[in-house]
Length: 154
Image (cartoon, rainbow, N blue to C red; front, side, top):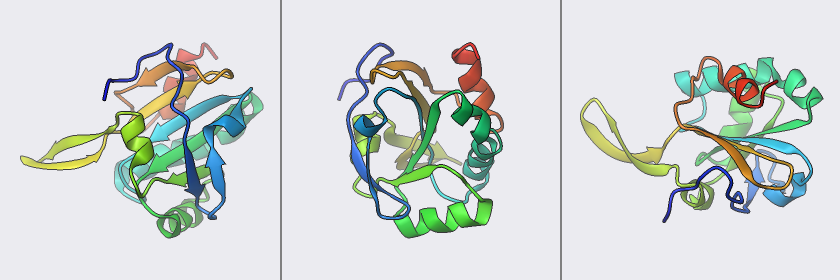
């Protein structure tokens, strides 16, 4: 699979959200979308990242920006994560790994010398027309919202 680049169309996807509702990228046409991929619900870095998006959610929403989080966790795990941290945005359950693979964020990782497959923390900023305008590969989990707003000049 070739790596996605800025300027390309974002791959279309359909997945279940935390409530079992079907969500597709195309339903957000006409809005900017922050599509952020994270490794696992309720782990330290992922919680920090999600809580930063939570704390800045109203500001993003007021600028017409939709926030969608994606991990390979299931809907039940997402529901617990949302309830525990009062997350106001949608989390998508990519249990079949179709979205992480389409976006090229599933791959080998290395922790303490142990190699394993997992989701690379990556954020895609998608324009109103579905074009990828920014890809953040070095996500600062403490301030992902600042990274997004800076790249958008907001």
